[in-house]
Length: 71
Image (cartoon, rainbow, N blue to C red; front, side, top):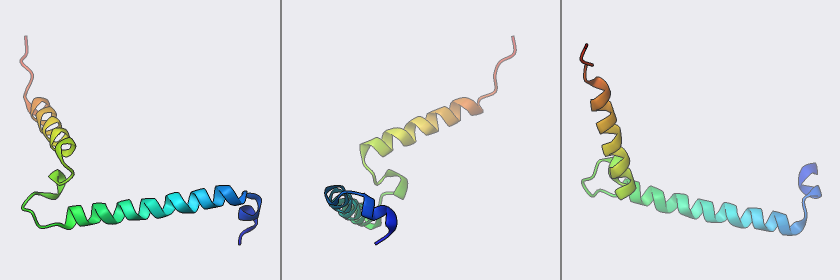
């Protein structure tokens, strides 16, 4: 055990290791979702939030690519 970990209370160490385990489980679930063969492109597999972000990005890109009219 490192010198810094000896200073951390046992309760804090348990809480940290517990949250690290939960994070690993969430990552595995996300990997399954994104690796699933369901015909969707990877940038849209995250659900409605990804679709909204994608459409907003495409709209802004198109708007930025339009030449401005000179007055």
